[in-house]
Amino acid sequence: MKTVKQGKIHYMQPAWADRSNLVSGFTTRNGGSSRSPFNSLNLGLGSGDQLSQVEANRAAVSRAFDLEPHLLLTVNQVHGSEILVIDQPNPEVSHFQSVNSDAIITNQRNILIGILVADCFPVILYDQKKHVAAVVHLGWRGTAAGLLGNTVQAMREIFGCQPADLRAAIGPGIAAHSYEVDRPVRAAFRQGTGQWQRIATEVSLGHWQLDLQKSCLLQCDAAGIERTAVDMVKECTCCHKETFFSYRRDNGMTGRQMGFALLR
Image (tube, rainbow, N blue to C red; front, top):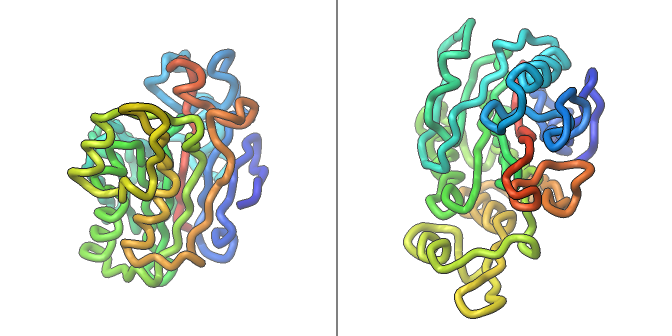
């Protein structure tokens, strides 16, 4: 993963992304106009920041890739398992902003699809043969529910993508040493997916450190994505205040960075 400057913004680019007709990566918190505690490239419309500042930041991201701001699409993320599929031309995508979803898949060019995070993990999926991209929002609920695998399955069923052709990028999120959870989280994983025994370390009675990044990687394995096709951001959002927003570190008063994909 390398850091790329594009226009006013910086983003972290997967190692495989510069060899295809795809623009993708993970924004940092730098290069925007929001003020503390949302400084500076806050892209979250519901974060508590001034709407005008967030809209200016989103416009800066769009224009960095020669797009009009209305072609930046994020959805209403609800820590659920719904997947939005865009498989038809949409000259105006703003009507999707209120759709409840935690993953977006598209084969349409020149739409910037994005997932907003501030400790949860953003994952990008891309099939170079079919030219199909997806972005997935993975907190503990989505990870336990197997949303990553469900997204890969949807790409197979709708677009004919084969897991062996997929590339993946796991973006910045909270590391296990900064992320302690309790019994309800354990119960969700035991009832769903995520391989609890391999991603959780008990630190006290009824409390575990949870490695969501490892769970994402294991779910890529389970979906049939080759390890050599997966790139990851190693830095922890909670530990790197100068680079990333973190909901847990900042007690909820913080901005949102974005994992994004743009088909050319």
